[in-house]
Length: 225
Length: 225
Image (cartoon, rainbow over all chains, first blue to last red; front, side, top):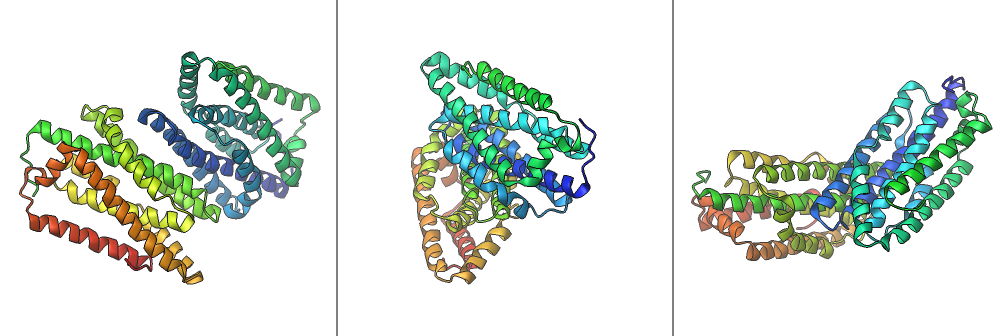
């Protein structure tokens, strides 16, 4: 799986696409989390979400620097992914603080799972960077605790947030398909398993792991997946 | 001026107020700048504004830590200032990217000038912290360059942005008066010059310096103050 044998130019095009979509994802997440932190009921809650947003900004900066190292113009590299990611956020604008929290945890979780799965196809440097920016920086504990407390206070919240979680997954998949359809270098790379042998069973196992992780995250929030 | 002779309890109440209003100003600036960065015409512009926002977040974190060191509960300390600062932002929501930039530069500039003037009344540790969080982190150069380029491209922009700059000053003063009217410990401390001799001539000189700085900032943007 880690035996990368694709030609350099093809690898570079795919990895630039991958880091660029990840970079814009981080920048957008930063913008949304920061804006959502203004919906927080207390200053401490706002501070927690603001800290998560700042972490996303650091990740964006690291990815942007790596794009420059690879000889890419971040502006050019990122532009193709703006419509899909903006579309995701437009279709999943949280209507309140709790929806914002669930989106931060569940949405970021799905994204991170995907990038970590993909990262095994990358050269060690790129893999380390992707792993680093997908790390949980302790934000999960805050979200889990806050959402569970809200459900205890008002059990009716759980049904609404469970539906919201499903909508997040649906919108994420829809935009991911859009990106895959438009970016040949990236989707060829992913389908070919980065030149390594990635058979149908492995693709199936990857989706199964991602689905399991999503279900586990929803359950940790006290929500049906 | 730097001879601080007010009783400890009075000083502590005033400095907690001062750091708290500054902290919430930084948190709000972080939230607004991050949201405004989503209006940027290019990824590079968005990245520049996002970096400014992240710097504000670091300042917020430093001020919040200092409030805890002083034995204050940041939540309690900050709450009294939420209405005034939220009010300022509600009344000065930028209608586009350029208004957001002018607000970031001119609004932050007025705030920083004020806090730096006040900081001479503080104990050295607090003074150093206020000076640190009011430092220009290079964001001015980016804003000046971008706004000047926009005026060259469309000179009609200058009139609109000049009016916008005056509105920012008016709203800032209006909310500052509101805070002063509500927070006795803070306003007594400021009027007394922190226990040092701050006469009318010095207060006049302080406002004159702040007005001069504001005019200089507007001019550097190519705008009439």
